[in-house]
Length: 374
Length: 217
Image 1 (tube, rainbow over the protein chains, first blue to last red):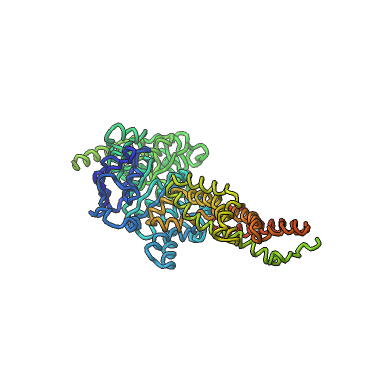
Image 2 (tube, rainbow over the protein chains, first blue to last red; image 1 turned 90 degrees about the vertical axis):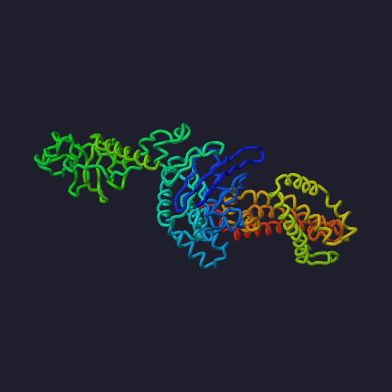
């Protein structure tokens, strides 16, 4: 565990970057430091590997003050990923990744073999090994940055706005990749960002810092969304807090209706037997959804697939969240969301009303949990 | 072109001998200048306030006429090649120090931060990151310094036979042989072009990591 204990950073000109900050950063989880510019998040991160020395307070790594070991030994035990990757432009990709192992005295062959292994782990083709950084795209460079940080298998990973400079599509890919890698490796990650959505997506716990380097709230993302500590945090979280919070509720409990799901060649009886739902979801021969239609507008045996209404975005029950389910229901003109299995076959439909009930139930459960904790 | 390559015997060298002497007198000072400029430039990068005064001093030294240097130096080093080379080395600093400072400063801050964060100490950071990335800028400085040094060697004729190809200009006058002057000018120019080309080649060999024109990923 990294314990940040009443740390203050005051610069000679009197500016206070970090103000009596205390944080316990748990092992094997992603802790995100988020806040507006000037909130001291990068300064805090850089104090963990002593690129910035605190004016007051101390930082303990597994109970020991980080100042008690040589600074470069400390740094080599912590991977570091920075915005724009900060690759060594004069070295090949494989040599960039092998930097820290080489510093630790590994042989050239062993270090390069390790580098190749890491390229695969972060989703880079090993044919890029002998290329130079300028020959890679921004997203690829950032993957190299992550591989370089992981090269010596450090227990701690410090990430300073690593994905801020790439476009949104690439950023999403890198975030998913990081979560996947974290699932496999279980590092203690401290992640700095100014993007609250990134914080909520990646963080196991999120520390919201306010200007002047003071801690506003330190909580898991779902709690942040449901109970922001003060107006600053609420404002920083932005709009749609309630909708975004639904991302943390599973769609597993939704009661799916299979009655309204009918095949393209359904007969009159089948069309009529769909229960009270005002619409039928028509599927193709494989069971994949085609669109919605009102029962009295569908001709038995000869359904015209071009006249069906769009069905929004389907969700995977159990895998996707209530947010995805609700989104599907809102997008669909019928007001019902379509649930599909892994192959994209419709397994049922669920109404906005049913989703609304599930949300209310989730809230109640959540409140009882919160009470139990207190 | 009568007697174009017929070098008068008072110069004590044949044509190629003069070329060798000229290159030695021109390039050794640049090398010495580089060896001095590297640590000076690093100090200027480390202590920002130092750069302005250092740059001022090198500029003033560049403005000192070589004849004045010769007068000062002859008491110590005599009428030798060394007396010619010392001012040339001093002159090269005015180009080399800013070139190296700019080169080292051109290293992106995130690259430097990453190097620090990976546990590279100041010496490793300088030798393994800053200096290699500064190579293109350093070689650009060396090209200017070398070519200017090649043309400046000629003034060595002021202290006797130390001007190498420049002495041909003097002999052209004494012996009324204009082709010798043409030879001096042309040969000096060709040397300049060849040395410049050699440095461009060295840069290409040292920096396979530079984006090349016309090559995209």
